[in-house]
Amino acid sequence: MARILVIDDNDTMREGMAVTLKKAGHEVFAFRSGVEGVAHFTAKGADLVVTDLKMDQMDGIEVVKRLKAHDANVVALVVSAHGSIATAVDAMQKGATDFIEKPFPPDVLRAKVDAALELSRTRARVVKLEATTEALSRDLGGKTGVSMVGESQPVQKLLAQVRRAAATDATVLVHGESGTGKELVARMLHDLSPRAAGPFIVTHCAALAETLLESELFGHERGSFTGAVKKKLGRFELADGGTIFLDELGEISANVQTKLLRVLQEREIQRVGGEETVKVDVRVVCATHRDLKAEVAAGRFREDLYYRLHVVPLELPALRERPEDIGLLARHFIAKHAPRINPGLKAISAGAVAGLCRYAWPGNVRELENAIEQSLVFAEGKELEETDLPAFLQSAEARASHTQGALPVPHGDRPLPDILEDLERQLIERAYEKARHVKTETARLLGIKTSALYYKLEKYGFIQKGDRPPEE
Image (cartoon, rainbow, N blue to C red; front, side, top):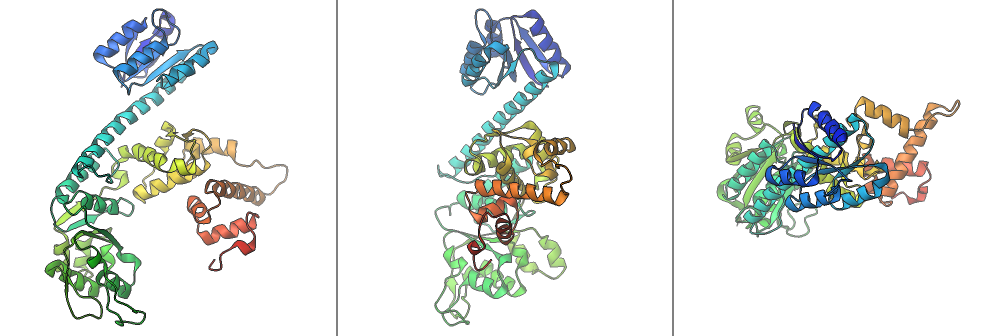
């Protein structure tokens, strides 16, 4: 339920709108003049204002101006007759959120109000998020830092834990599903810590074989193995005076586990092939999606190392555990990626947000960001609609609408494979143009491998066979 002001000097129109909105469950305050409505808003506020455009004493444009002067974030709808659409647009330029053209049925009013209230809630969330970011910035001494986007209780609890942990030098173990933002949290721990001026070194342990990982972490001496033509400093030495982030630590071998335990106990390392020890002053942050306690029980992870790492545990919530953040994250990713992919798109519809909220997001925030990027490639309006989302995120009604309005329609006896091939070519062409003919970016937007993209580009004549890189 929302508190809504209705301002209209036409008794029939005013009472009709009030009845419609009351039936929708809202608390409605109706006034016959702009002066009365503005006075009520100034004294008691409201979640939304619906005002007629043409009124005596004070017209709708003046109402909006005065509302904005009192509350810059006010959400107002202007009701306009057909002959004054240009004036209604002028009202939007003065601060109105949207306008409704007379005459209109009750369902149009309800839909416009629902959309405007969603915008109002979004603005409130953004204000709260900006306050959180400002607080983080103060903690960082005015530096521009990174922060986790979200206003849900799990995120706010996590941010409070990060602030407390950052003030210490204790080893932190970050646990969470893939895509929940473990590296982001590690970066925040560093930026908020006394070590913020020092280096922040990231190592993805699962991406390297055991011998390579050992050399990456601890360095090596010249001639210590084939290809070691000169001495190399390891990540721990490079992180001296700062923070090292070890991602997917649950994947390291027993040998590397033993050497890491020594670093945590003695604060010193020994390069591969070397004999001298090197002291290091490093804060260690680790992350894993595995249950390390279960790994210990199974004999795959050292118990003594587990307790050395498990000094300050931080649990990252899965996206499905904080659905109230999905809309806010979607808008964040639109603001992040739309200037590069689709500059004309500025917002997301309530229907699209609902589509995003229906999905469980096994890939978490990373999967959501990828879905938004893909949607931006094919969206054509100024607002991301549900029909712009990947098909698996759309409702049955949206998929049916999209099929009727966007997919190729069979002509005569044209076979289905030809129709599907045309659709594939169109999708690839649009992504290729959006990516400005950058192949790797096009492949990423389409969610396919670069090698597969080159095959498709050749097939449809976008490139010649000689344009394919030798390694492809």
